[in-house]
Length: 424
Image (cartoon, rainbow, N blue to C red; front, side):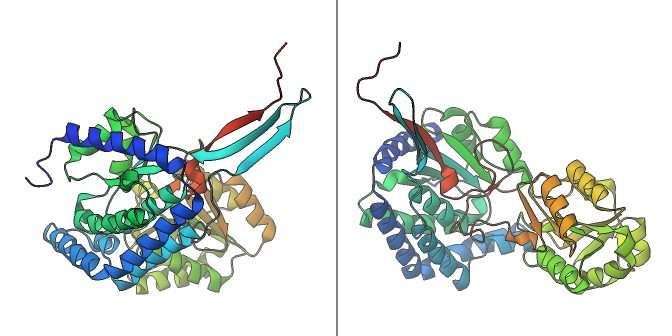
């Protein structure tokens, strides 16, 4: 029987029940035990690097046969550097402060009751993701650190890679004598398994985190019968203010677009103050086109930049995840903020400005999960925030917002200590 011929209902029910049982035990584990699992998992990733590369080559070959784009192939690819980064990421998560048991607040009532609010694990987390197999290590590590059991459903394109990485996590759990079912992978590429996870596992799954493209995330948000932490898409903006330093504008914009075009923190739209457009745009756009980026601009942009092609209304709402950027000239900071409010996805925005008052206005008025000043949007990453890693960038306003790291995977409960008080 192949991995795609399993009984979905029976398999997913067993996974859910095992996850709930593991979550109970994991929540009672100590930080040192969980850290031991992370250390052992990192060591196993390094030991099995050749096996991970071999599995990844199978996935890449299949992806090429199916005509996957260069950007998506880049998301899928695991080389020695990325495998080492996974291992180092697990170790970085290990070094984080224990997010479980933190005293978030405490006070005493006039009647003598002592009240504490403390951090506790969420329970069982379902994570549905696409393409990037390193998410398997990041997600497992963060859930383990925060005392949560997790059910992982990676993309079909990374199926073999993710299974090899999951085996390393399982080895780490065994070394630490923690339940192996603390981290499970859905054992099939059948999309019906995702549907069952979203719609029929509320008895065992406490929250779902989607990480991937717009269609995946919309499906999860539409079908899930449990809370969802996630974002629909990353339409990120850079605004070049009238006070922007030309060198900073050029270098930051190039990095924000072209460092990695296929990630959700890649800039998709550049807004430029009209009074400096003639000065800034030709050099900024030349730097981008020389790096292989297509420029789609409004009428002013196409007049100033020979390589630019006319932008359509759809370009302002497009998450390209490719070497394409839309460019618009605006009358000033207020129009830039309004454009972001109207077309943005609430993910990440940046202002390039030497005027500190303008920067503070932008930081205050732009209501996105991450807002930067004089820095690349590609810093929208839990690792860059010092969180060790992240499951994704949440753009909602309930529970978690921005990079979702170990702390964001906890809830809280109240401990109330008395000495015989009764309520009158």
